[in-house]
Length: 330
Length: 244
Image 1 (cartoon, each protein chain N blue to C red):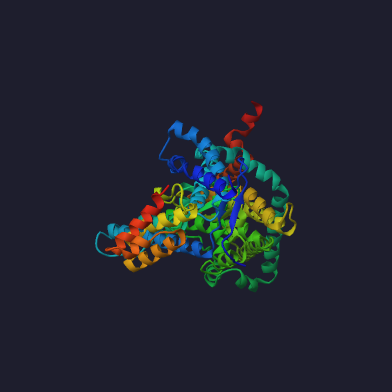
Image 2 (cartoon, rainbow over the protein chains, first blue to last red; image 1 turned 135 degrees about the vertical axis):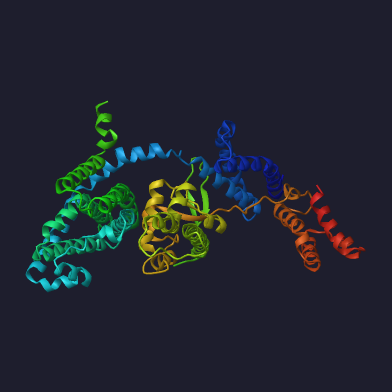
């Protein structure tokens, strides 16, 4: 048999298997779309995968520019994706995330958390000192309305619930805080400078506003307003900043094959912390909408809420809230 | 820079690599525009229906004072639909959205499998950067400049957009095996495709194509001299594929 005849015979034998490919592809499509939970289909998939791989290899050689090869490429890719698709159990995934993965991320980010908290605290001190020494600089950090209100001897938070209902206030606050927190993380993409800027600016603003209201004798009422939600809110900002700083450092000093790969690994790892941050900020928003502006809530109760929520945050981040310690003992 | 379509090649345990064609800026923009219209229309529809029910008369006007019911039932859900559309649907549809389906693309991880929930969330968080300064400027520049057409969110999540190849079909049964005469496998595919598309082509076009095919693979003499040329050309093609 000459070469051409041999090739023709091989091609013919390959194309006679088209029926098997169609059946394999139909099974894959049923499984990938979730339309089939038939055990027979699932056990067939591994055989189908091998069959398609084998025939695709022959088609690449015998029929490189044909629709048959294109069909097999698509069917093989679909079988590969279906076979390599992990099980999707959202409950157990969330439990693993909060019990094991987030505490591990917090531990690995510990140096970044210390640094971002230090930067934030230094910026707040700088803002306080700046406005305390040069009060007119408050115009750089606060709106004219806020300045005018404080100069009249009132906090802008007074009577807030008469203007905006608690529920609306909560949603507005939590969506704003979440976007600031996510931005602090994403801005790490700019080699960490964006994160540094967000942390520094927020620290400066906090310090500056505190210095300004203290000059008008309103430091106590402002602290009383902030204490219930602020402990966790400010901590979460530092945590997001730490996640962003880790992303930034991965770009500045890559630890893997390339910058992009380092960036991907750092972003995926530290990004898990953001899920906990968003959940905590939802709680902060509710507290800031319902508890903080409510003049009927006593200072001791606010303190209790603030400290209690902060301890809850520690339990969440250490995994103890989801039985991490119990799991270890077993 | 952006170039011709390249494939993502993924190793497999079978030893035969999986080849996935990477989607470029055009397919991405198409998918995004479809999704953008869907989320805008659904969010607006929610707002309009919610406002009409809230007001109890044909008016979309908001209340004069801040009202929790207006905000909670009309404004907040509409905003949630608009801003959480990609995040929720990509999680629910394992890396796809209606727009991506229409554009024939889907998200995959670097190993060719479905992206994890963490990767999908990270990809969507980075929309904050990709959408800067406006109209996804950063994302678009990144997609055009990178080899695999990745936006920043894809780089962070280790995902990329590939063509689904859903349109790839086996040629008709006539081409399932090459004829024993002059027709090889590639020729059999061409003839089968021409016969499949016969009714969609104009008589002049299909007769011209049939003549070209038959000139290459032999035959067609009887068609040239027959009474009904259209039917004769088709019969010649069918004879060519059935001759074994």
